[in-house]
Length: 252
Ligand SMILES: Nc1ncnc2c1ncn2[C@@H]1O[C@H](COP(=O)(O)OP(=O)(O)OP(=O)(O)O)[C@@H](O)[C@H]1O
Image 1 (spheres, rainbow, N blue to C red):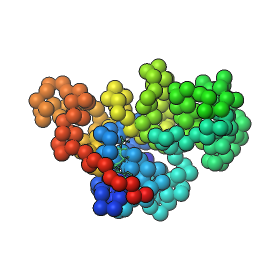
Image 2: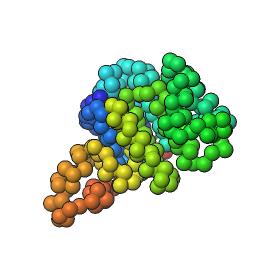
Image 3: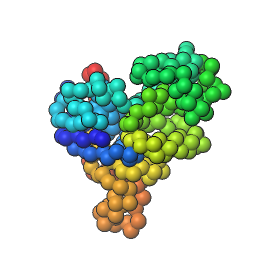
């Protein structure tokens, strides 16, 4: 589904993503973890075909990362940290906008399905700016899946969201993977990371640990001298190995 080889992104002399080589199998929920500034969003934006890599190569779906980025953008779903919703439009109008953008056939039917699935029927005619953050998150989730992409990128979709909405959100993720969707998600919540089939820990632009959660725990137990480490323990250990790459002036 995704193969990256030595993918690097530099902003000026600063290396935000540093030679990342990665395979993500279809049908998985793949979690990207790392401290603030570790490079997760930059890596996701490259996988989405939004940001060209400085160097490296790869394939997303069957498309070349550098030469076919438009095809990638058209065929994936992406829920960014800053939800790309139009606050003055209603929930339904937002959904309709994205459905048209992605060339969805039978838009009306799809909108009804989407409103139903994400429990948005009652707020369909409300403007997004009148809604609370939990519902806005559901609207953003609905817009990123309105074209039923087989590959979905979710960048911190649950930050600032209440536990019930988080729970419902994860149920939706599982339902989508049942339908064959592959999900790449970033999160700062370790309980959410535990729900992923595979996780990768990023530090200073590099992937410093990758694998199934249980396998990682086994791998890190001797290094940590803890019999049954939590993902939190591993995270703290990995991050302590050199700290993060820190901030950088915005260079565009
Ligand atoms: N356009 C840009 N110009 C300059 N530096 C940038 C740019 N975009 C990102 N960076 C820097 O690259 C580094 C990685 O940022 P990125 O947003 O990918 O991290 P992250 O792991 O997603 O962090 P967070 O968890 O806070 O979202 C940061 O130091 C950031 O300041």
